[in-house]
Amino acid sequence: MEQGYARITVCFEAPFWIGVLEREWGGTLEVCKIVFGAEPRDYEVYAFLMSHWRELRFSPPVTGVRRAEAANPKRARRKAGQQLRGGVGTRAQQAIALQREQNKRKRRGRRAGFSSADRRKKRSTGAGRSGPCASEGKGNMEQREFLDFMHVLERLKCNTLHSWTSTGRHETVAAHSWRLGVMALLLRGEFPGADMERVLRMCLIHDFGEAVTGDIPSFQKTTSDEKREERAVADMLAPLPQPVRGELEALFAEMDAMATPEARIYKALDKLEAVLQHNEAPLETWTELEYGLNLVYGEENAAEFPWLRALREELRRDTEEKTAVRAAY
Image (cartoon, rainbow, N blue to C red; front, side):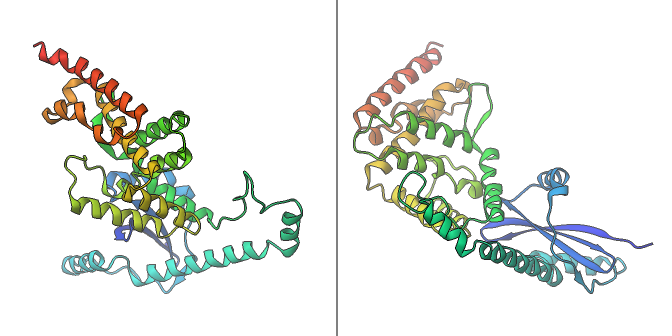
């Protein structure tokens, strides 16, 4: 009876951790490359395969699969060491290359299908002119590229911050970014002259790097940590097509330089949202450091903007009221 098998190799392929799922059957090998983002735990790999097995897309088959060898402990250890050092095997790499080339041909075919007649039709209907929908039709984002990037960002829903919610669970990075974005949205009329749509974009993307690095509290973050996060962001954005990649890179550069009002508004909101979340969390989740830090955190950032300066003062009063309960005992 013909026998087949499947195995998965998890390894780091900058900028992400990936899984290479190989299946052999009838003398052929097919491979599926899975992007995990941050390093997955064993149970996460298992859960992903169980949930997404039917959705996986395998490469064209590669022939010339070797027969299974008799088990030999020394050979097995040596082979495992080679895989750890070099990632997946040659045949798997060949299959992945075939799949990549196949995808390229599909993309070229789709682009070729966009005929000159189609382009003339777009021009006649006004597409490409300036206006609210001026960017429509100008992108180069492929669906698979988009989904791969979304898979990495999903880690922001899983990775937690050191802060807690009012219901006693760790806050996620994504939840922090979401509320920060809502803050920018609601405050569009409070900063005359500032481009609050740009601030909103900064709020949504500012913690992208933590999909790879995880969260490090600001009061513990070192220069080395900051550089590691910068590298993670650069590696994450590298596979994206233009003009999306350039727009995101410009936003990150602006946030890093802190030279524009928009960047400084984002940074002040970022810190004040953290203060707000601590005020909402149960006191038993606070560290000793946070009793003093929550009274002053973000104060310098908010000082430039009258509305945020007043908000910082309201938050300070909330902190004093909350911690007064502890001082009474």
